[in-house]
Image (cartoon, rainbow, N blue to C red; front, side, top):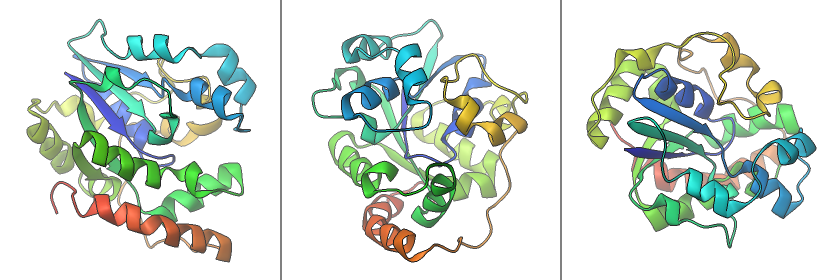
Length: 231
């Protein structure tokens, strides 16, 4: 089984990768198209030069790597906005596609703390809704996972025909060898964790520009949220 887990940034995606990586039967990949995305867009992300220098920039080679692995199963952490026009998608044939969501206000507040000013393209909701129309798949919400990790993960495993493994609920603190080089900037909290954090509190306060951005993202989020498992 190859799982393509799609989400925008700051969306529990690294914790989910660690969860599946805690299983003995899974290999994991961390945003394999990120360097391709940065080189082709010219965007100024944290650690841009290091990412481009360290990771594969040929999309055909990345796509080939996404087609097979040395473990029984492969979990791939992907961001939909990394799949630019002209980047191959044939690797996705036969994948189990899962779309991971988080409320736009939470994503924007968390991401802006690391990057400052954001655009709608940066947070990926438009691209994720478009990708869902293209490849289909299942939808899960990070709020449901944090509220009851075992219930949510059992439900996901059942839905994709994968036996649940209790190992998914915990992982060793610290980095993983599969982490992208960007982990030193982004993964501080998850490196300190050994499992999923508890349920989140009230939505964060946003400044006026952030609130407008969240409002623009909401229709795309709600489109997918209405399709989520366990609703």
